[in-house]
Length: 195
Image (cartoon, rainbow, N blue to C red):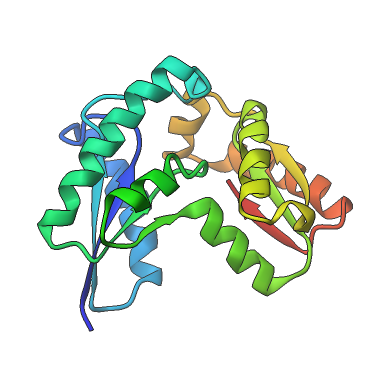
């Protein structure tokens, strides 16, 4: 049965920019094509305004602004024939609120990755992009009932510049990921989740 899914990247980046479009097509679309069912269509959406710098994601005022844009973007998708929405952010921004707003499924990558990790092993390690994301992830782990299964959360300490550079050449970030992943494994992780 054919499905049409919307993937919302909660960042205020210009989707008309050739550089941003190339990143979406070369990274997100190419990788999703390897995993999705043949009759599933994925459409990618960015916010008109919002975060352009991952270094500022913990600012409450910017979260409020970003959240408004996220709500407006996702709210409009329900009437466009989508069967579901995927929030493409490893902090599941306003997942519960968006589920309350829509009559179609809304999937958060933290929640779904932790459930899937639990099927693959008893203990999970998360490698995230910034140390300041760890308290936010720990809150989600408690909310989702997964705190006891996550034995370590480590960080590659990536800046916005690192993040965008990795879309062109990810070698440095991959090496940092490996270093942090080893710490998770040493703590007892049987499954690793990039976040």
